[in-house]
Length: 456
Image 1: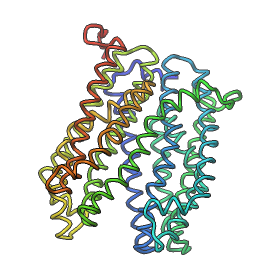
Image 2: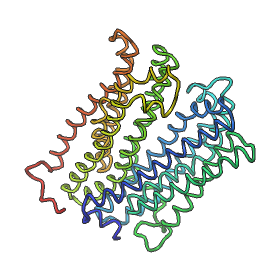
Image 3: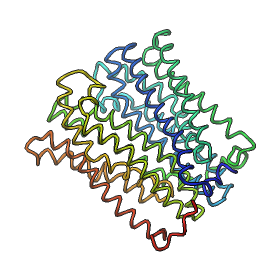
């Protein structure tokens, strides 16, 4: 009980770091795994296999999007119910998450296996890479149920007051994966199938670790009879809340495809490579902000359910401050040290030359991206699905896709138009977020004149 009631009593600064730091560590570990996994596949299976993994990435992201549809929505709902002290429904969220994940992941698995090759070809596979991509994704899809349950339970662990346990589950999965990769790829000569199998086995072990916490009879949120029957109220609200990150991830996949095609048309392969370098740099800092968001989510959700709107707002402000600080580092590195940052990834002089200008263009709006990300997460955290969905789609669909298509027609250098479409869409999205936030403050009755005194 103490793990959850502290959401409404402990100082916000202390709470945020308690829940955000493990999430940041876990996401950093996941990033490290992705890098190491690519290195193993590149050296053990060859360049074509590495290219096939790149082709499979958007497909994997779409599968993960369906997992976030359940996991993120349910974790926000769990925090709200705990804040309302509705422990019966809080426990039913746990059972419903398992059942929903099994149903949804099975549908994704069957559909993916039936249309696997056409999907991979649509994402850029060639006759040379389709074999590798098929072998990898086939194993991933067979283990899709474990993947969904793993991410779903990890989200619930954070909302149930166990951020370190959630972090440990991620580190366990990453550690086992890194150990099994060379054994399967090199030792057993299983190639890309070995890499995929290592991923699924590592997630299976992590799920077992997670289940030990939910089988603990001393826990407030745990497995017991009567929680497995799907509730229309719970599933409906969870899916509605989770729709925001789901649509964001789906939109992101299509945006990447469109940007890559535009860059290839106006700048060629080097432009795409430059975009990849910039993405790798900014992704590190975006992951840190996502960790802050994960730490903020249960705190904001609990206090919203408990009608402690002052603490909801304070949590939001503090998270925005930290997120802006993180993105300020990205801004400084991108604007002042673009050559040094690029040389971390390549020593090709042509690629370095083509990366400097677009890195400065894209990083010019880093200072406002943290606020934009945290604002969208605020509405997800407090169950305001409509606003969260709208904000998640403004940058990707409403602004970035049209700008990426139209801006090359406006600029003398079409390639510049592609690059500038990214920071312009970020600016427009931030302005939209400010407008939505002002409206939400009024609707929640937490304007400056009605805020109760802050207790901490």
